[in-house]
Length: 349
Image (tube, helix red, strand yellow):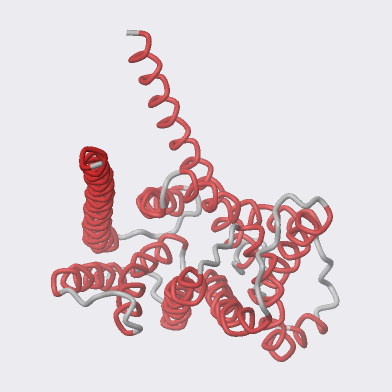
């Protein structure tokens, strides 16, 4: 009875911890998205410089990661050759910088709610790029599901009251670059046995992103900022914004490390609905019934996609257990045969 009680307490504790990790990630993700919107939107803080904002994030995150690794030695840096860095980390850093630049730029033109609806296309982009790069096997059922998600997002876009073509192009570009980055992480890093936690990831990737972003910044935003003599760097606004961005990276690691990537996908859907509700009720963005209907269809498609992934993971785990059982049975059989052979030898002697 006591043993069952202890097991029950352990399970309850694990569930509560999982919900805590989910809540932390949703809160920080929610905060970073709304904070970035506040800074970049011309009707709010009115500082429409997405490249500069992203560079501030990368400079802060890379500096903090270097201090945590080199000074405080909280984690050990991953052993990585120069060739691996150039061939693996640099392309991933380039894609990450483009993804962040374009996604932050979209906040200038689109509402928070509509951006979240467009982000529902992420599974479509990841699967399509995975098939093109031969990382995923093409399945007609999965592709039908992807088309249903795309159809739902298309309806949501058609019903958008403040539709901006340039904003949509920027957000779709961000989704494409981010999806490519996620696939390349599996191909270039995970396949080589290189696993980066958020601190080591920022240690290697953030400086690379900063360098890539500095090229368009020099030609696009630096001349404008130089002429804006009235601007004074607000350490409170940009400092707290950068801290939130860094904390979000840690929360992603915490959530995926303690639960799973699938849990983060499901939690992401909850976060999107909360952001849509917040955008409508607090920011006063217009959310039309057609918007919600289209996103509802996309939401069902994403939910089914996550369900299929969960079933595939369960089947894979079951197969591993069967293989482990077969190997153990094989070892026992070999031991018994060797014992029998040993006894026969002794009897012959």
